[in-house]
Image (tube, rainbow, N blue to C red; front, side, top):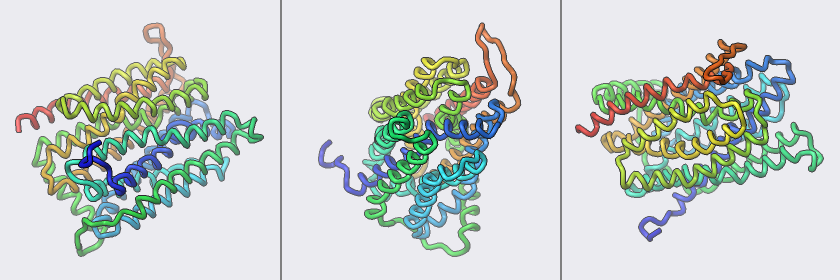
Length: 426
């Protein structure tokens, strides 16, 4: 890395926060749903309803964030970005640490929702810091490194938690007590890696506004939405993004819950998702390199198409080796599609209005996360007890629920192709 591209201390601190919060993301997609299934099973909850309840909890948390995101954005513009960022981090870390205080599955879901609200809300402020902590020339690279090192860095606390849970007998612990310690390890990791950014970051971009934050936020959101509708190439892209990122977030959030609901070996599931993080690290960097040689729109189309194929494959998933294949494939494309989607928007909007449109994009992402998990939960619930035979393979309600995501990828692909055609014409 030459001197011009060398990371500053502030840029490194920003990337460190991605490494810190990604530990929680990995825990949510691995150990937490398995622990929830154990709590629900001990309480006599119908096994066919595990995936549905887990999906509803995820949907509630994401829609709450979608509602408060505009308020967070407006307050952030009023020089409150850093204190509010730290407040949301504290909420997320404390809730994460408290996940082990109850053995009741419903109370557990309540604490989990608080942790996810803190996590996602912190990202609203964290993402908005990017233009302040780096230059326009380095922004794509710093953003990609955040994703890449977030994937690989989160492996460190996860391995410690995994060893603790899988070898709890050797440490003289029960599985429940090992999980309590795992929650604490993740919360401490997240909090400690926030400290460098909290110390070095100082808000430099802000505006003076009058009126209430609530009124300003929704008025601004309405203005931005109306402007986006006038710019068809941007509006169509945001609608396409809403659909295809829907499937991406749902697969990331519910992978372990899905495998566990199918009765696959817990240890195998956890190791497979550890592999996902390891694969995602170089692949995120590779897609960043590809974007310098190939059209970004083409790369996004490839990612959406591959995710469609992954979902179809996942629909027929029945064995552990198939889950391992699924884990590798997801790792190959998840970092690429997230990073490229963010940079694609930056190329089709006016730079002076980037804050407005990225705020709208964030709301589209949160709405997609809500729709995806709610769709899987709903299909899983209404098809409970149903078993179909397709090509000699038995499909349970969980398989049908995951298969429903294919429709959303197809809609996203069609709309993105139209949006990309408009952008190329411009």
